[in-house]
Every structure is written in structure tokens, then in C-alpha cells.
Image (cartoon, rainbow, N blue to C red; front, side, top):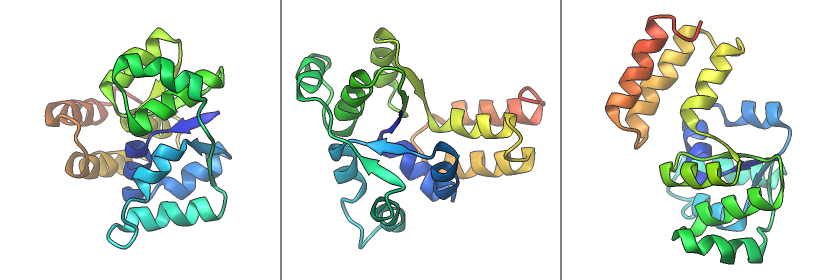
Length: 167
């Protein structure tokens, strides 16, 4: 099961890649709290309108997170979308969790949950020949502008791509 936290979906939408991901993954799941975060202001944000449309078309599905898992995970001081996305992944063994939250990465690792961030999605598409090097670089430069990734991290990845590290 592919479970997404809000920021990865927002990034993929802003990069114009969300529809492609819906086709590739076949099923994308989000918990209710992530849906609420994504659709907070559909009148103001174009990405929210796009995601709302994908929800209405059932290309992104909402699945309820287990209340017992949510309560247990509160010990880690998570809340909202991150909390429910992690609970949903715990309740569905073998799931892949898509999130950019660094704290969530550590906790997911404790529970042997595979966690992938936006950067890894983009690099994977290049490695699997779904995007060209030029496309990947374009996405990375856009991501640098729209994300909260540390600039030196994104610049480092860009440098690695330019050097052919992922070829």
C-alpha cells in the first residue's frame, strides 16, 4: 500500500507529476488528517484543487487510520497528517510511506516501514528512465524553490546528478 503524507503530494502536484504517479502506483492512500491538510483552502491553492479532483476521481483514496495505532504513536509527539499516515502504515504491513518529515523517517525505521521522500521519488524516476537528466534537473531546481529542503542538500543532489552519479 502506498501511503502519502501531504508534503510529498503537494510537491508532486506543483511539479506537474501527480497524475503520472496516480497511474504508476495505481492506488495512493491518505488518511483523513492528510486530506484535511491538503484541502485546507481549495479556493486559494491550485495544487489543492488538483488533489481534490484526484480524490473525487478516486485516484487518491482516503483510508481511516487505526485509533489504537494513533494513540500508541502519540508518545512520539506526532500530530495531524504525519501521525495518521504512520498509523496507517503500521496497520498495513509492507506499506511504503511517502513523507518528507525527518522525524518521521527515524520512527518509521524503528517499525521497519519503508519511507520515501520527494527527492527519492524524483531520482527513482530518472534511474528507471521515466525522466531524462534534463527533466530531473528541472524538477530539482523547482523543488529547491518550493520546498523546505535545506538548500545545501538540494544543491548536493543537483551536483551528483550533473556528475552522473545516478546514471
